[in-house]
Length: 404
Image 1 (cartoon, helix red, strand yellow):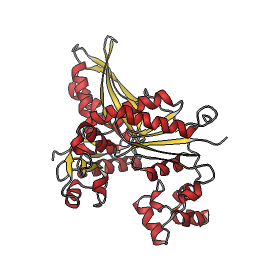
Image 2 (image 1 turned 90 degrees about the horizontal axis):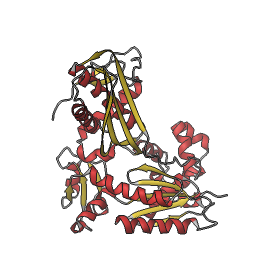
Image 3 (image 1 turned 90 degrees about the vertical axis):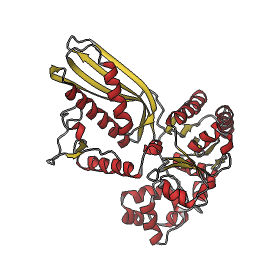
Image 4 (image 1 turned 45 degrees about the vertical axis):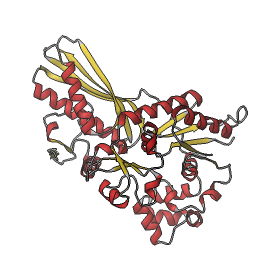
């Protein structure tokens, strides 16, 4: 039986949300992101792209390229609300789906042909999302996730595209190699220097040649160029969580020690989210007193994986939760309501310097271990929950966060 994998992507999601709120922004060049010179473009309308503007670009450069653009500082609460509206519609209509990010979904419609017709069903689902959310959305459908994702890109804006079984290679062949997921700027330049510009050229290359040029990634790109992909749909579950706790050897009321522990826990959980390309929508704090009574407090937050958003919320929760003024035996922090998604949801709160800081810190952690680098405020916390890994012989680097 052929698989029918659907990929749905909300078009220029942040921009579309802003236009839904204010119809005067329709068809106007629009940038969403940090509004200062050090800000970053989180999303840009199609009207700005012909000037060379793209997401992730410095807002200062984007303004120079498209001076007539309207700039809006993003609102995570708004985008989370509309994302949840679309998620609820899909959840009600599709038996198995994956929420790949705040604005991107996969669904397995295999086996539905007998009763509904998968493509017809997907078309009706898309129209329902447009009607009930007011947002434009595109989709691609094929036998696998990669081809469907590329098909969605070709269908945009606000359209749909079906790639029938057996036509995957023919569909991909004339496209630029940039269209293959996992071909970033560095890989693109390497392939272009070899004279490779279209997917068809990769299809005609021996697999061994791609591996010799790009290593393990060469095999992945070759398979994707040939329409080969066996990635499964990862079913969406709203209640996934990450948590960590610390039980003190001696009950304490030392507020500096407690706050340092809480701070370090929140920092490490945020890193774990980024490492797994996840975003959390809920955070909670747990306190167990010396009399073994345990209390929890949680709050909903806009989807994020950013230290500078999660840590202050955790400290605020702890402050509000700690009311009994008794000795504390245990503290814990949990992030939940986790969805797949990357750090770009926070771009409108960030500067280029902040993004580079996170990337640099995470790169050090990836190479030397989770505790190899931490903010100065975390240095007093040791052996926190499961994060008591050795430093591989290297001392931890201390980062003092300086206000801009």
